[in-house]
Length: 222
Length: 117
Image (cartoon, rainbow over all chains, first blue to last red; front, side, top):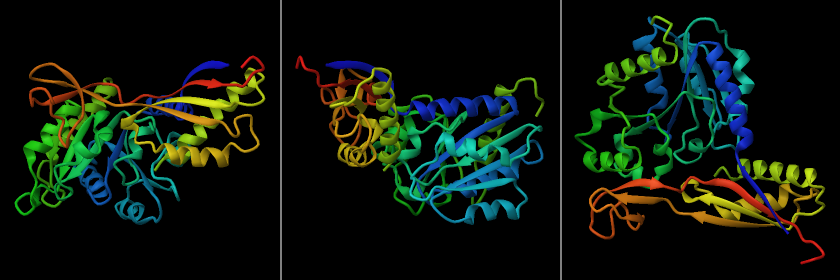
C-alpha cells in the first residue's frame, strides 16, 4: 500500500529558519549568509566591509568552521561582537545552530549580522539559516568554471562578490565565461568585483549592502 | 557531504507519518531529489540503515527519483538537459539559461506491506 506524504525532507530546518527570520526582524537585524570555498576571502571581505561601514551601522558576526577560533579571534581583536560555531563533522551551518547562539549577542541598535558559513560550495546552499541575503564569494584564483561546477550555490544567491581582482593579471581567469555561467543560473545577480588587498570595489558592495538594510527597515535612517 | 543531516530529517518525517497512521513497519520510501541538491544516494541509504534501527522505518528501501535540471536556449527556445561543461543548447549551440527543476527535495510517498499485496 502506497501512502502519499509530500513533505520536504528539510522541513525541520526550514521551520527553524522561519523562527530566526522573525527574531531578526523584531531585533532590527539584516542577516547576510556568506558562502564560499575555503580561502576565497570570506573573513577578509567581512572585515573590510565592517571597516567601511562601522560608523554607520553596528555589526555582529557568527563564524562557522569545522574547527578552531582563528576567525573569531580576528573579529575580537577589532572589537567586533562575534560567536564562533565549531561544527565538528558538519560541512555547513543550519538554522538550529544559529538559533542556539542568538542569545549571545545584545540587540537594540540597528545591526547587520554576517554569518560566515563553513567553507564549502556544496552543502551550505541547501540549509536556510533565516538570512535575508545569500552572498557567494568567488575569488579569481579559484578559476572561472565554478558556476558550471557548483551551480546550486549560485541559484539562490542575492549577490556575488568576485574577490582577489588584484590577481587577475597573473591568473588565467576567463571573465566572460564566468559571467556567462552566472547569468545562465541567475540572470539578475549583481556581481561586485573587489580586492580585499587594495580595497577596490568595496564602495559599490557596501553601498548595496546598506541599501538592503534600508529596504528591510525603511523607517530606520542609516 | 550533508547526507547525515538529510537522513536525520528524512527519518524524523517517516517515523512521524508511521505513528499517526499506526503503521508498524515501512517497507519503502519514495524520494524525489533534484540533481542540483548534490545528494549521494548510497550515502543516504548508509546513514539510513544505521539511524533508523529500532524505529518503524527500519529496514525500508529508499527509492530515489532523480530530476535533472532543465535549461532553455536563449537562441532557439528549446528545452534541454545539460550535456557539456557549459550550458550550451545541443540543437543550435546557443546559450542556455536554467528553466526549471533540479531543486526538488521531498518525500513523495511511503509504502507499507499489507495482507492484500
